[in-house]
Image 1 (cartoon, helix red, strand yellow):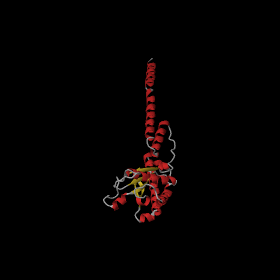
Image 2 (cartoon, rainbow, N blue to C red; image 1 turned 30 degrees about the horizontal axis):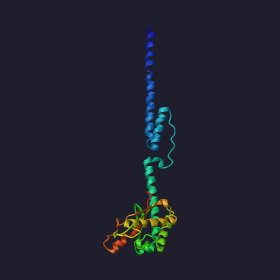
Image 3 (cartoon, rainbow, N blue to C red; image 1 turned 180 degrees about the horizontal axis):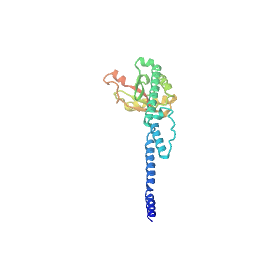
Image 4 (cartoon, rainbow, N blue to C red; image 1 turned 180 degrees about the vertical axis):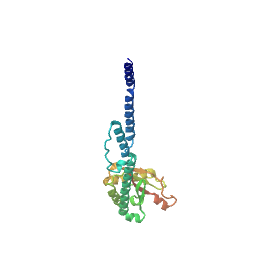
Length: 242
């Protein structure tokens, strides 16, 4: 009878300790789950290997991890995106540099006599054309020489994808004639005339914007004729994409 009681006690203790097996299994699976969550937070083959090893330990056996085939797979996602953006910016600078060189070569005679300036900034490439090359005093209609000059610019721009902003500028002397009651109307009409010529030359109109600034953005003091002549201009800016 004593032996029987001993067997009963041993059987009871064994039944009570079975929960430990389930508990250990649960802890193992929970550990594997957090390893998975950590590993997928960053694209990194090192963490992928840690995930693979952990799962192997949890479920008996470690599967082979394929080796990285390129340097990109070993970089965090943010580094990959930053590198792609830097490469896109470099290509954009090269395109604008090429365009600036082509504009300088095509407009060389006017650049040499000071009637045209080509400049390049972070905003894009700007072609500044003195108003006397394009218009009669107080007028917004383009003459024959103006059409030739702007046609040269348009031929270089029509195959480009960039947005183009055309700005009209005047000096500060008041104007009051039947067509233009103020310099605002004159500068806006001159910018619009250039835009219309670009469209007629094959530049997509959705890329174009016409803006009139009147005398509000002078390049030189309006205190003498030389300064006022410098301020009467049209600026064509090919805007950088980024």
